[in-house]
Image (cartoon, rainbow, N blue to C red; front, side, top):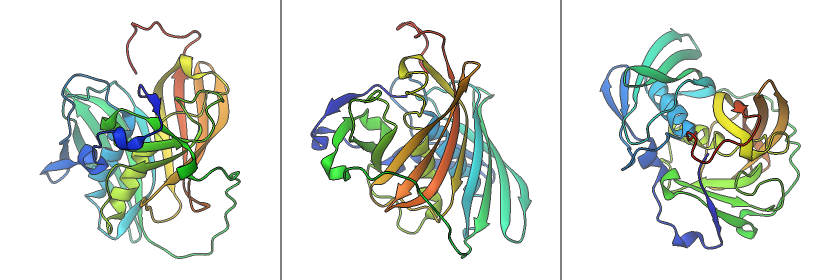
Length: 277
């Protein structure tokens, strides 16, 4: 989650390219280090860790294999002012699929762990119903002004329900252009986006939301993020101080990716001086 305010003019923002935020340095065959750090200590955005874990694991498979699914667990709060190490384990390389496990570490402790699967691109008959109600075009929606270090542009149509600062249906695109012929980077960018906001506002309310616990993402088509994508979160189940929701990433009416996430929440709103997410 990120502190935000509302503005109409996106040109006022200083932009940070998303590729800068996601950049990794390879320091050994299966070991990588994040290159982007904030100037001051701040909570590390979970989407950044997940995206970089996907980049690290994808760098160890054959280039023609692209990610089709991942499942990650957020275990500890990360510090955005410090580097993160990513260690990749090769579980399997088959004829069509590759499986990888990756852990993200700070101070020798695992802050995030993830399994990811990759496949060579295959053609097949498509049977899809998006079920998404049309909304206004992004050019007709209001700008949600974010911390420029988040490297995202977000536009929201409905400011009345339930909380405009944590939208459940919105448009998004990255700051800067992504490499034209690198599907791994596009997949990582969509993974980065998929942890933004939350889908539990109508059931538990954003004021009591806690940290993300685990996250799953499936890519149904070769990932591309060249322009605006529409994100549609749907309520799931909230019980036992844990909430689960799912969502779709839509490009020109087609579902390109689906996600599911579980989050902790509180009985009451946390104190303002309490720990950040």
